[in-house]
Image (cartoon, rainbow, N blue to C red; front, side, top):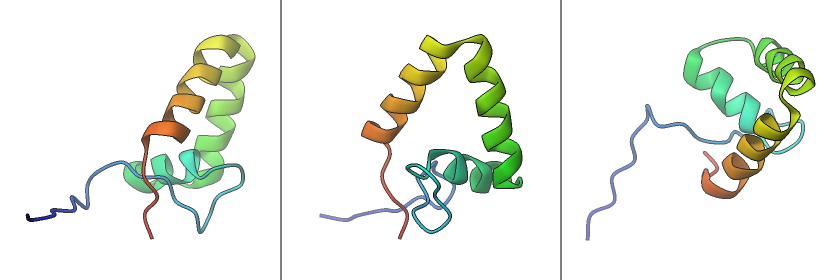
Amino acid sequence: MKTILNKDRFFRDPHDAKVCGVCSGLAKNLQMNPWMVRGAVAIAFLYFPMAIGLAYVLAILLLRYRY
């Protein structure tokens, strides 16, 4: 069985992680500064806490680490 790793796929990044690496992985995928993504997520969490919290927990559970 062949295993194919797509480099453009969204992963969690354990090397630059502050909590679980979700924002860092998203920042690498979007080619942005991780602190900008973390700030945007924090502001969005203030306005939509249930939706952002649920999305973050699902991302933690469903995304793989990129080693």
